[in-house]
Each structure stands twice: as C-alpha cells, then as structure tokens.
Amino acid sequence: MTQDNAVAAALREWADRAPDAVLLDGFHALKHALRFGARVGPALASDKAAVLELASELADDVTDALERLLVEVPAQTLRELLPRVHPTGVAALAVRPERAANLAALAERPRRAPVVVLDNPRNLGNVGAVVRLAAGFGVTGVVTTGDLDPWHPNAVRSGAGLHWATAVERLPSEELPPGPLYVLDPEGEDIRSVTVPDDALLVFGSERHGVSAELRGRADRLVALPMRPQVSSYNLATSVGMALFRWSGPKS
Image 1 (spheres, helix red, strand yellow):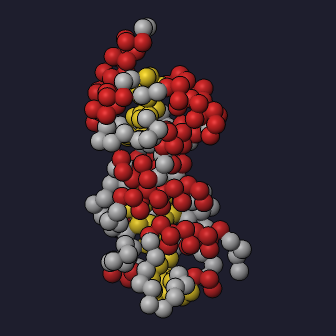
Image 2 (tube, one colour):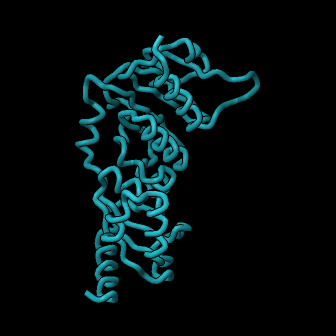
Image 3 (cartoon, rainbow, N blue to C red):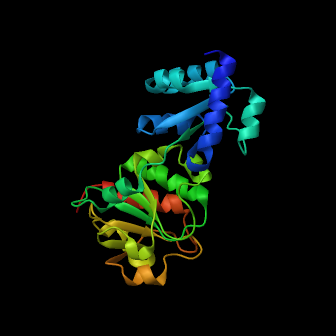
C-alpha cells in the first residue's frame, strides 16, 4: 500500500470510528493505553519519526507497536481532526473497556484495594488526575456519580491514558460497589488514626459542595484529612492522593 493510500485508509477508519471511540490525545496517553492493553487504531502523527524517537527515549517497550500503528499525516490534517493538537503531534482512537468487565472488577470480593468514589465532580481535569493517581496506587477503580463523563476526552487527556489501568465508570450513588463507605468529611476522625481497609469505598466530594447528604448519611465512617486552620480545602486530586497514601502505608 502506498503512503497516500495508507493515509486515506487511516482517515476513513478515523471518520468511521470517531463517534464511538475514545480519543487518545498525545504521546503519553497513547503510550499508557498501549501498555495497559487498549485496542488502539488508527493512530496518526504529523511526524512519525519524531514520535518513534520520543518512544525510544521514554518508552521503548511500545516502540514496535507504534511503528506498526502510526500513519503519518500532514500537520494541517491533524489540526482539522482535533479540537487542539497535543505538542507531541500524535493522536489515536481506542476502544473503551467493556462496562460489564469494569463493573465486575469493581464488585469483586474480596477486594485487595479500595475503590475511589468521586461524588458529583465538577472538573474533568481533576477527574483525570484522580484516575492517574488510582492507576499509580493500583486501586481497584474510580467511580463517579453525577453528570460528568469520566471518559470525556479532557479527562482521558488529564489521566494520561491511564483509564485502561484501572476500572473507570459512572454510576448512580445507589448502585455503588459493595464495601464499607469511608467518607472524607471535615468533621470526621483524623485519617492518620484510621486504618483504611482494602475493600473500602473512599468517597470524596467537590471542593465547594463536599459529599452529598445522602452518601454522608450512609457512611460507615467519616474521616478527615489534616489541615491547617483557615485553609478552606485541598484540591480534589491532592485529597485523593493523601488518602491513598494513608491506605498504602503501615496498618495499625
């Protein structure tokens, strides 16, 4: 197949798959999606050689896969396809994990790591940052309630493609996975004195609104992060990181 034909075929496939696929925007999102088993394609780059060189420096384990997947297209074509082009000049489409498989992973018992619950989050960047933390700590998954789609392209971009490294789903609050609810709340016990069990649901609210009264009322335990007086709140991802660090530490 000539290069022109390869470009044409890749663009046809992009047009056919785009409405149902997840956008991987940039090298790091594509790298992580490949590492954690995403079905990827097509993958487009404005400078294939530059992307392969970047892979050889930062992620040589995916270089061969990128060599096979990447189709070089004009930079203008990439600009026409994307809301904004990542500085690395690469983008791809990927198949979202099956919801049934994610729900099964979230519900599995005994659970060896917590599930992070974001109660009605407002910021897609925060959601992606939390997914990135969850992947790093090896938790079972991230569940959001409310209207925000945790698989929105902005969340996947902020999560650096690590949505495939953990189970990410949106659920009504009444359909959360089983497990004790540990709700983060300023009136709770200092988390430093609490042992967070492996099967906990760690529930976080937004910075302004906190956890809903409904979930707070269902809590098995309210826990609080240490905070200096007159400081109003932490960023959501910071709060999640602190709580997961406590869970991952020595058990009292």
